[in-house]
Image (cartoon, rainbow, N blue to C red; front, side, top):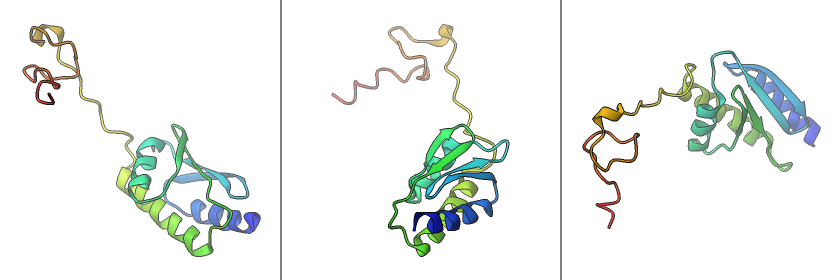
Length: 126
């Protein structure tokens, strides 16, 4: 069962836009993504779609479905992963916000990730 289901999953993954190679044995597979596509945002988008995959390298996703997975569930997983690839885009993760220069910190600010004037985030939580 694992060999047949794994072959179906591998074939489905190979046909997805953004996947350059599929490797693995049985149902333990990795989908290598095309250059310029980051795995982490796709894994996050897949999780939002109800599909659990792991970004095992910056450019590869691991899929390890249970042995009892049906053919319909394999097909649905491929559809959800394709949607996750489309949702995440091909440009990689969004740029990180740069912290303000030290000269703009207010007195008492310890976190350079906060913008000047945001104050103590725990003040309102108390």
